[in-house]
Length: 123
Image: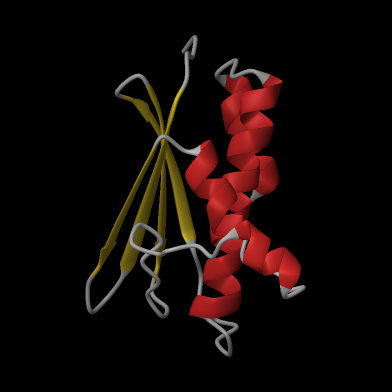
C-alpha cells in the first residue's frame, strides 16, 4: 500500500515531503482499519482509491469491517499519554494534522473514509 501511494503521488510530481506525510497518514488509517476493524477476519480487504481533483488529492478508503468514526474521535491529550506511558493514540492525531479534510460515512454494508490534502500537481 505504501508503495502504491508513493508511486502514484511521485508520478504526479508531488514533493517528497508531501508524499511522505500522505503515505504516513494513509498507512496509519489503513493499519487501524486492518487491526481494529477486521481483528479476526483474514479474508477481508481494504480498497484504496486516489483521486486528483479540487486542488488536491482525495484518498478514498473503503472497508466492510467494524466502523470507527475518525472525524468525531476526540484524541487524548498528549501530556496524558506521556504521563500514563500509554502506547498508541497519536496516529489519529497525526492524520488530522497532516490532512486538510477528513470525511467518514458508514452504512450497513461498508465504511468509507475520505482524506483530502491540498497540493499542487503537474498532471
